[in-house]
Image (cartoon, rainbow over all chains, first blue to last red):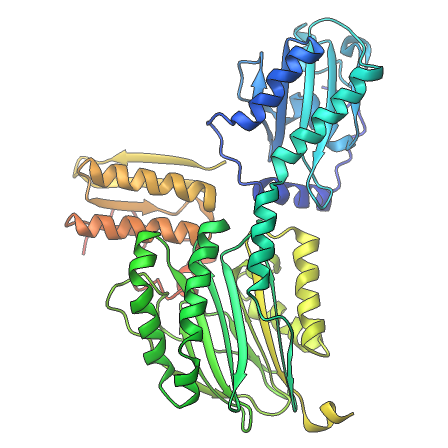
Length: 404
Length: 111
């Protein structure tokens, strides 16, 4: 076993690539007709006995679609596709027996494959999530129009693997349901960000002011995609309907319990549940009332920089039919910062057990809400989040900060 | 890709052991396995999380769904051997009191 090809794999690139592969959420052991169409046609068009769409997943290469090959997966290191993935470029091997980059592969040694052509399939961020491949037992060339056609079919395969126009449209609709702009009133500043892992996501947030009270809410619907988004839109609307009562002084625990009751049938039918953090903050004195329904992900930084968690003992909405929720209270002094977020962010910090330490550091380092949200969005992009990442930041600046 | 070991013991308790990451894709499979067990008459189930490295809200959903259907059939679902990292997911959602973690599979139904 001699490494013929330059396979110095960058660990960071590989980690990001692996996460990108997982975020495809491809089911194994089922036929994917949308991929089979492509490999069937490829076999016919290029007159080759074998064609695959291959995904390198951990230490395996597996085939979301394959024609002319019995196996459904192979050890990663024994595949042409692994090397194409590392090279991140179109690879055409007229005769693998005389190509020392590939001649050691078992399929070549066994005389099963001599010709190979592989095209990397990339996601929107450029991660190589799969390869589109042709194989023949005889040496041959791939040139001219056929080479062009191979590129075209690879683009089609890439589209099927990573994109869906309908979903991105749904994502735009969902984004339009979120508050359009930041709230800046006096010393207060509120803004949020929602970065779905798929085109549409199960997270939602909302904020708005009424009669000197700011309402901040963040929910996370179990699951991802369109189903979760529809449930989220329902919960968000139901919570918004209680804002006037909460402003007037009604206990937040009672209103959240009402929302849970009204959503229970929907949640049970969708076999889903929702974690929710909802707060009502008085803009005059910073007196904050909140309910934590199984979210547990709210941090408050004091003016001196200590971080504390705002959390409760209550369960998510939709778990137990006769559950109740309790209002808690806290105060945001001038110079305080609050960050509410979804659990997708936990996956992106180094210390998942003491997550409040790295996230507290982000809160401390930020100069305003927008720079805090930008640093979170940066993590999402850098590490390819697998789950939806949503955050709402509330800063109460010191009086001189706002006027300077 | 996650694997599931499923076993029904002599005392009628079903033991499901997810090996790897319980995310949206594998949670669907876990949900199927749990409902097949309950439908097949196994109403007492232990989910052994000793080999589960990651659990997201979809995984929690599958466990809660399994808990509900097991209880509706007069049984129960218990979880055992939860790692500290996975335990934080139960604690954050306050579901650690709905699904109390047991130290071992064998003793999961002792109380």
